[in-house]
Image (cartoon, rainbow, N blue to C red; front, side, top):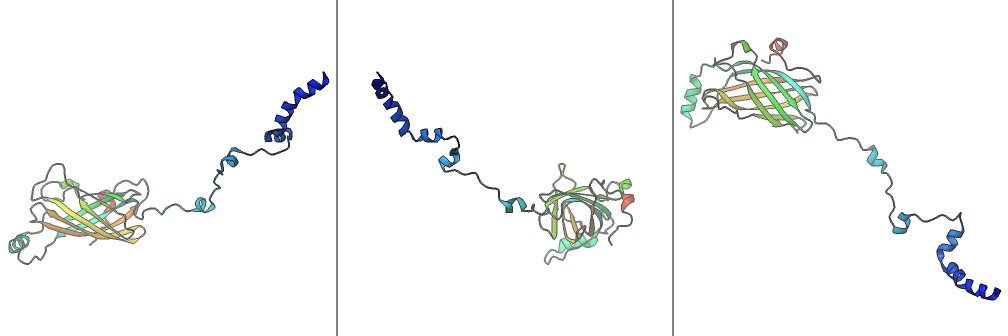
Length: 217
């Protein structure tokens, strides 16, 4: 009886001895391989250089800018355009001139939106500087450019309705440049120098009383 029991236990013992897991399971102190080790995949280690990498520099123009432009009559010299030259010479230069407030907001992407309006709102009407909106992409760290946006209601041909703004960064918080405007029929041409200054975050748009001492001649 003892011999039969020993013989019947041999297959079970042999199977246990041949199973490689048996030896490891029998030794509680043996470290077990992880799933990553079995599959050959290891966890990526942190990259110190990536963590220390500084953020991309902010657009130099990002923020709120405001200032004053001195708009006046101007003319162009165009050979072969005698009729235009005659019309410009007859322009007395008394309408659509004067001080204009320029207010610009620039997003971190460089998208700039500006508003131009007459400083003297008490005499709004024919002959006064109209309120215009300009936009552009200010992604150059040293220069800016914007164009007058098309208006929902087309103005009269004799009103200023198109133009450009171009400027350069004078200091980190100051920019200077030139504003050029034209009427729809191109009979009136206006230009003026402007100066923009960076405003503190949350500062309101400039009012006429706050810009009396900042006229650019």
